[in-house]
Structure formats: structure tokens, C-alpha cells
Image (cartoon, rainbow over all chains, first blue to last red; front, side, top):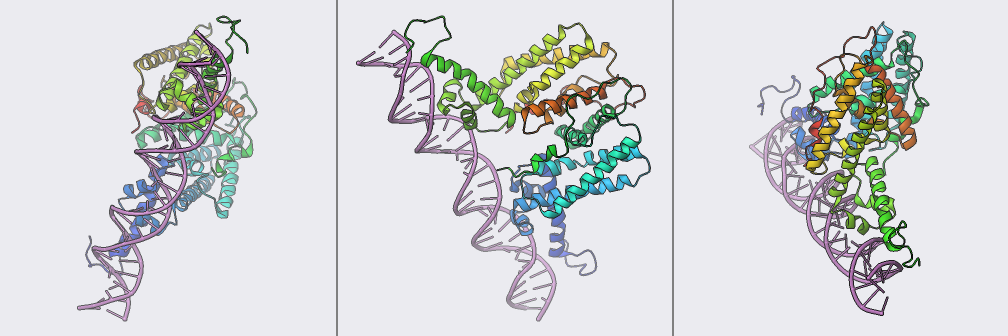
Length: 217
Length: 217
DNA sequence: TAGCAGTGGAACGGACCATTCCGGTCTGCT
DNA sequence: AGCAGACCGGAATGGTCCGTTCCACTGCTA
């Protein structure tokens, strides 16, 4: 309990400050909780954040609202990482560091795995489209670098991210390490190799993973 | 109507036959349902099987019992496929066909993903141990063939199977195709390649994925 | 034809959860 | 100083979902 010493200047003190700080605390807690279990109860978030349920409902109209927010944040993160990577000079490096960052931040769980639990906004649709464009750009540059096997296609990225997100152990830090390893294996598998035969079956198609976004009834 | 003519020989008719047939129908339905959603309600299985709930409870003491049975079957399937593959002459082929079969049958979802929903029997423990031995044997043979990259370790198989099981679209047949593709990528990634750097981070350890088997409370 | 294995499905009781509501506390303003 | 209201903790509410039990019924089987 900081007393009334600092008043107006500093980054807010007292009740207001606590409230403002809670904004972040709650969002962080929500991210952690729903990352661990997409259908965790709201109360779990409140507990994790160390606040009451009211603090949550003061900020979000309901669970769906919170989920949507979280998912949208993840989407934005994805876009941001893609843009950042795209700014780099080396084609292959841009591709791999983008994937590494996205895997590290578990953006996939934050977006795809939360899909269907809320009705998306129009803006999310736009962001998703933009994300797809950027991913394609990254992919094309990777292909241009010549290090990508020729029968790999853009939607393979979906498979790759899903695979990495599936790796999961109780300890988050260890999870990150194992995912990095898995990513390395997958990237090696998608790289040009002299002998390897072609990948089997029809390659994944563009919208083939969108089914998750259909509202679950 | 078929009176007491055929009594013991023929595949049974009438009430008894129906019952015997239901055994299989129910098990199939249960597999399909729980593969799709490990926490599906019992009623979903009954519906899918086209029988009443009683038909289920006549055969299994409860949900846990059914799940355990299903899981054990999966485990046995795993062992059977491993033994079968081990009998083949070519080291690398034995390894890859084993994996393909296990992935096709979705044995991973049947075992690991159902873990923690029931208390395992002692026999399952034995079978699990045997499964691990066989997997290791297969892995060592693959290594002996020289086609496996040197920094791959046995527990990487767990990562691999988890990854493949994570691939999932509404259509089961398409799911199988996509998983085959994913498996191909992963195997390529685990194969010996001239330039590739070493895999990052500490490799997965032996019991590192056993946490799922701890009873969820 | 009596009896019962086998069954369908309603009913029960409990667990779980989103959301609302009711005091209470502290603050910023007058 | 004092008060209106922002903010909050957490109990209470109402509803859904699900495992399991129960009971009436059917048609073999002996």
C-alpha cells in the first residue's frame, strides 16, 4: 500500500494506479491460464492474477470478450513479428527467426486454439488476412533463398506451427526448449536435401485449417 | 425365428447375437468418439453406436473402465505393430513403416491423450514398458542403418508422434493424409544430412512425457 | 410359457461455471 | 472534512452438463 506521497506526476499512484496495473496483471494472467487450458474457468484467471472476479468483469463484458481480446493480441503479435522479420536482409534467416519467435511466444495457441470460443470482429478478419499475406511473403523469400524443398507449400506452415504447439510439458521453459528442437527438426525436414523423395499425398490447401474458426456449438 | 437348429456353431443369431455384435459396435464407437474428443460424454458413445446407455453399462463398470480398455487396446496395437515391424529385414524400413502404421491408427491419441483419465492397471504398466523396449529396438536399428542423424534420441519419437497426432482436420481420411505428410517431413528432418547444424537444447529425456499419466485431479 | 438376459431412455444428484449482486474501501474532488 | 462513486473481493444465483442408476419392456431360451 503506497501512501499518498507521490500524487499527480509519477505514473499514477493510489487506487487509480492499482487499477491501471491490474489491467496488465489480468491480461498476463489470462494469457498464462488460457495458454495452459483454453477452457479454463474465468475464476482461474482471477485467482492467478490475485484479484477478485469483479476486477475482471469491470474490464470485460464477459469471458468471450476476454478471449477475443487475447486472441487479437496474439494475432497482432504474429503480424508484428512477421513485419519485423521481413525487414531483415537474409531471406532464410528472416523465415526461421520469424518462426522461432512465433513458436516461443506460443502465438499459435493464443490464436488458433482459442478460435471458435468467440465471434471474431471484423478487424480480426482484416488482421488475419494481413497475417496470411505476410506469412506468404516470408515463405516466398525462404523459397527464393533456395533452402526450401520445392514441394513445400505455404500451408505447411500451419502444420509446422501446430506441431510445435503440440509439444508441451509442465515446465514452460522446458517446453520452449523442446519446441525449439522440434522446430529445428521440422525446418531440416523442409529444407532442400539431395536424395529425399517427394512429400506424399496432396499438399495442404489454403483454407484447410480454418475450420477451427467456425464457432463451436 | 431361427429355432434351435444351429446352436453352438454358426455365428449366433437372435438376442445373443445382437449382444455379441454390440460388443464390437460399442468398442468401435467409443474409439471413434474418444479419438475425436477425449472428454466426450458417455452418451455420445451410445448415440454413435446406436444403442442405449444401458448397453454400455452392462459391459463396463463405468466410463473409466471403458477408457482404460480402449487405452490398453491401443497399447497392445502399438506393441503388435512394433513386433511386426521388427520382424522385417530392412532396418530403416522397419522403423518408418512402424511409425506410419502407428500414426495411421492414431495409437498416440488412444494412449497418451487418454492417459490420466483412469488409473492404469499393472498389466498396462508391463505393456507400456515392453512398448518402450520395442520402440528403442526399432530406433537402434534405424540408427544402425546410418540414416538417422546422430543427435536424434529415442524420446524424439514421443515428440514426433505427438506432432503427427496434433494434425487434425474434420475429415478423418484427409487427416491421415496430412499426418503422413507431416511424418515424412519429420523423418526427413531426423535423417542424416550433410550440412545441418546440431539440434538445439538438451534432448528430451526418458520419462519426460510421462506426466500425462499422472492422474488429473 | 415363465423367466431372465439384454435393452432403451428417463430421472437423479452432483459438479462446474459464467455472471450478478452486495457490501466494503479508498480517493479524488468540492 | 465529507461524500459520491470508482474499484474491488467474493458469496450467491441460475443454468448446463454428465455419470450413473432405475425401471419398464422385449423376445429369446429352456
